Image (cartoon, rainbow, N blue to C red):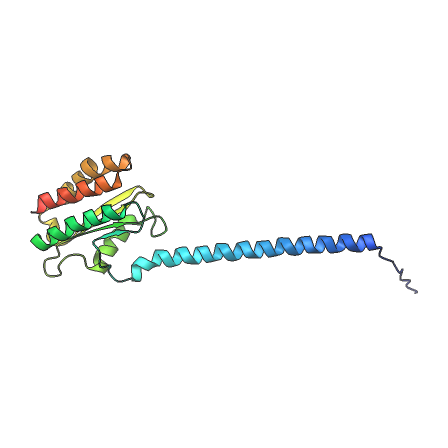
Length: 191
């Protein structure tokens, strides 16, 4: 059996089209790899950010606006209010705002409670800390009271403050006013 191989000559135009297609495929492959690398680094960054609050130490501030819904002057106003109350009563009030990169809507309440416990808000011997957790993006708010506060302010009172004072302001995107009214109401009930 004889096998005949045909020799084929490639024209300059055919070679040019082949090379043009190869460059095009290489370019598409490079862009795809770059896009995947960028997406992966964003996923890693989000995962790191979500776990950041779990492992970090308690901040030195009473107002922690991780969602960036407050101006610097608004943060200072709230901080001054809760610092003054803490000095006169020893009750610690911490405000924390969180966007959806920190937690999910389903996990929000547990996340705020975990922060309250992990950061040790309130004096240990009297368990008198309050954490106000807010997420405008998730449309969530929670007021987490230490056991020493629950005796003086039951959950019904906390719920009333949220529904009657905080949420109406949040519906108008007045986050500072809502938080401030909530803090004032807590202080008035606990003085």
